[in-house]
Length: 104
Image 1 (cartoon, rainbow, N blue to C red):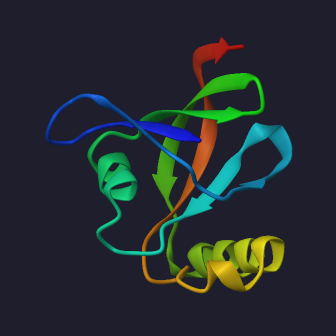
Image 2: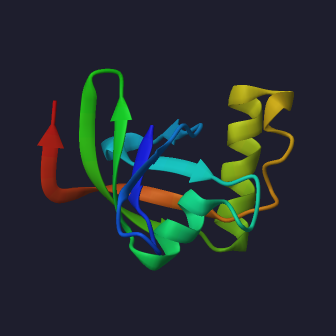
Image 3: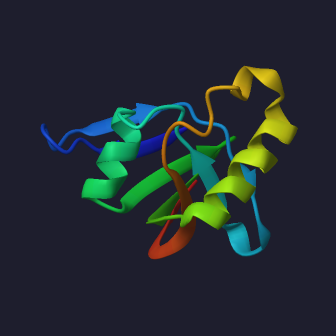
């Protein structure tokens, strides 16, 4: 689950997203649409939290360039299979652990 700040409301918005975890706790996520609200929220405010199991951690998002985006989408499709077929239509992000800390 990823929680972003709504770009219009300013309220916390939580959405289920697929992810790939890289060394150092970095997560890679991708939207299935150019207008996915959570992705637009990250473009507006890069700060977010992600919850995996019982652990919630603060992250800073960075939108991936085309080459890294293609790699991310390939890896997500390999992990999740054909239900991820819409991937590639929206932006992809790298979420790096933030110094804001963890909340378990």
